[in-house]
Length: 508
Image (cartoon, rainbow, N blue to C red; front, side, top):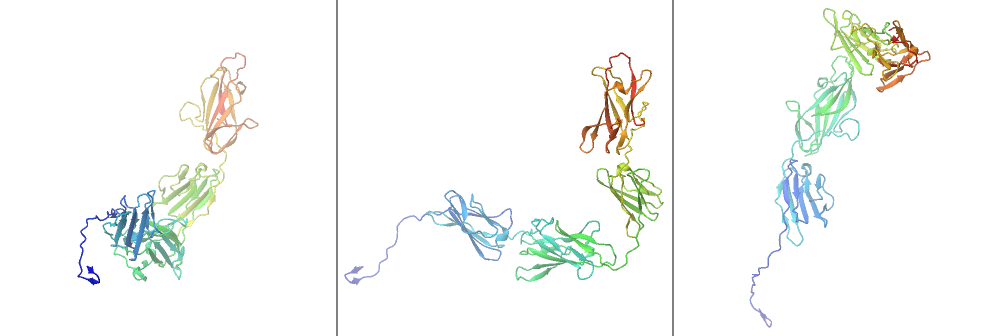
């Protein structure tokens, strides 16, 4: 207190007011990401206007994410989000992926509301990321193989300076992975194998000191890739095997993912072993369009390929037994026979595509295979004719059957339909189809309208009508094995009594 110009001793006034503190905002929720071990999720309280999130990245650098709720309820970030951090605009949920936050790092989040004091959520310590890295399987460059496994060069030699292929393996995250298999798988007709290479050398850049290091294999040949690594370099060096086998092909396989194909050229200098004798391929002189493959007497096995009438590849393998008898492997395609005494493979014209290529390779123990001169087949002879067999025992050929057995000269029952079945699908030109009279009162062609000859077109499976030639015969196209011939009786305005006859086609 001061009196005049004189001040007395100091007095303290204690604040005993009961004015309440302002309300607190609600705290956001922090949780570990249940779907991604090592990640975190921060969810604002519905009443929050703003949430500030902090956490260390994989390098230990502090990251700050601020998200705000607009008047329309939509959440947006302030500035650019750190890599691998996402925001749900509807809820404000901030998702921090395992690769965005340091293993064991602390995530903090504070909720803010207008006119209230800030409220921090319970801090969260992240787990160590799951060790689940695997090769990238995407094919962004469109070369038909995964971008995560790329081997170069595409062709190497078995010997010399160009005998090493380097495979770059790119992983889909930096979490690391234990027991990662890295193998060689063979491809094509002459597959390479892991035995054709020295032990692989797997290199990586250590993220702790940025130096290149070699990854030692586990006892089972797999590899433990440390966390922080996203790329491996694998070197496979070809081994000279002192035998000439020709070029071989294969791929590097990592886990279940295969990379691009690599060719290993056989540059061994050892002399080639003796060649087997080649089988002989010839056109069948008795059946135009057919082929005959005859093994050389020294062959142990002959491998034959050709396209069938539909263009589908057919394979026939015949093998000579210890007693000299030749037998096929598996069931022979229709129209193919094997002579057990000689191994001769006969391919009927209907079994092979017109103009198709027949290939045959001879094999002998301890020798390299020898292919015969490929053969191009002729177009089948157009020699189809009605089947003459009488399997049903009715006294007439099964290849020409007319129905019904009796028709009328007028009215609705005045049409006879004859089914003509041909003995092959080669087609035939100038096929005669006529009516011949029989018995005491023979019918004649003049007693019928012009016949209608129908067939199913093999190219589109539709029914079509076959037009007659100028002389009344018919040209049946290749691929057709059945005709339907309709003969409709003509009323002749005279009473002659019942007449009989047959349909004749070709010599039947």
